[in-house]
Length: 210
Image (cartoon, rainbow, N blue to C red; front, side, top):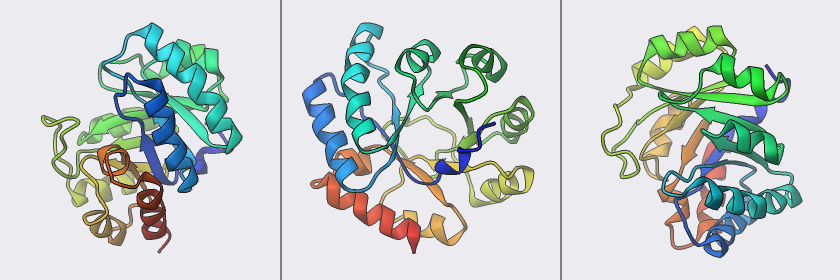
């Protein structure tokens, strides 16, 4: 586990599926100007060549802002870029397999959905953070299992690892999560599809610091 794990805190921006790399860089640049310093590159609709090309352009931009990049479900790409870490889902590599490849100094995050068993396994296997969701209806994953505040509280009781809330979170419903103790939330559409990404990022960050 990394000493830098507390960096998994605050607003966690997950990149949208965007085949136009210039558009992606423009959106990420706006989020950076808004104060976002933690990003996950997630491009389920693009092939490996496209992902390689995009992240080669994305990483230097993030580096200029001293922002951190986590790669979704691609350990080799994480290694190639010397990214901050990798995020694993239900059908991805195991934590042990990922750790063997990327070593002890990179972050491994795990999607636990609404499963306390996955949370327990992630903790036992050495994950650096766990993600719970969906807390609200989401167009990104319309069939995602729903998570309750009670399950969030159970997860808090199970681990001191950072817990990332995800799924349909926007500026309105984020307030209820923050009141319940959520300190880290991942957003996609509510940030990157907003009319003003920079302003929206600042609003999210202000809420999380309130």
